[in-house]
Length: 274
Ligand code: AMP
Ligand code: ZN
Ligand code: FE
Ligand code: FE
Image (cartoon, rainbow, N blue to C red):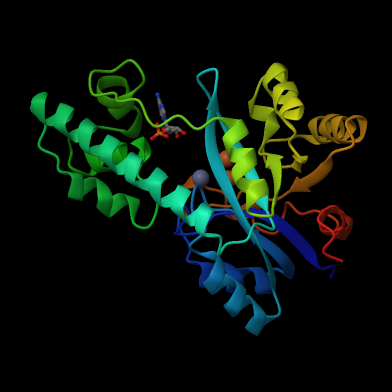
C-alpha cells in the first residue's frame, strides 16, 4: 500500500474530536506517513504530535489554519513549516484567544439581558482547548434546552443580524501572511472552492505561497481548475482531508484525501530545507 500524505487535520486543540495522539495512531493505521496538524488559530497540539509521531514513524509538519476576514467574508489561511516555538506566533495566538473570550463574554451578557440563563462556563466547557466561537455558544444553548436546534441559536440569538451578535476581532489575510512568513512558514489559501474568484485573486496579489488543491469540498473539475491556477501563477499546491472527526460526519475522509510526495518536497525546496 502506498504511503499517504494528509496536510489538513484538526485536533482537540481546535474543533477536532480526536487528540493529537489519537490522530497519530489513526494515521499509522491508515498508512498516512506524513501529516500536518492544522488547528484553527492554535499550535499547541504540534509539539506532542511531533514527539509521538516519531515513536510511530509518522512525520508531522507543523501547521495551523488562521481565520481571517476580507470584505466581511471568512477566509482561512493555512500555514506550513512554521516555527511552532516562535514567541511572536504564540503571543499573537494568545492575544487572539483572549479577544475571542472577551467577545464571548459580551455575547453572554446580551443573552442574559434577553432573559436566557447561560454562563460563560457553559460555553467554555464546549470550547475545551480551542479559541471560543459562536458554534460553541450555539452548542451550549442547545444543551441547555434554550434552543431546539443548532441553527435556531443563530437565527434567534447569535447570527450576524440577531440581537446578541457581537463582532469579532478583525484579522486581515495580509497580517496572517506576515505572521506565517515571520514564523518561517509558507501560506496557502484553504479550500478556495468556498470563496469567490475575486477573493482568490486578491490573495494571490497579496503574495500567498500556494493553494489547497485537494480538499473534500473540491470535485475533479475543481481540482483541475485550481491546479491550473497554481501553474499559471507559479504557486505551490497543498491538500488534505480537513478532518475534524466526530459529529461532522467526516470519518470517511480520513485517509481518502492525500497529496503526492512532490507537494511536500516542493515546499521544502521553496524554504531551502533540503
Ligand atoms: P465566529 O468565528 O465565532 O463568529 O463563528 C463563525 C462560525 O459560526 C462559522 O464558521 C459557522 O460555522 C458558524 N455560523 C455563523 N453563522 C451561522 C448561521 N447563520 N448558521 C449556522 N452556523 C453559523
Ligand atoms: Zn474546523
Ligand atoms: Fe477551514
Ligand atoms: Fe480546516
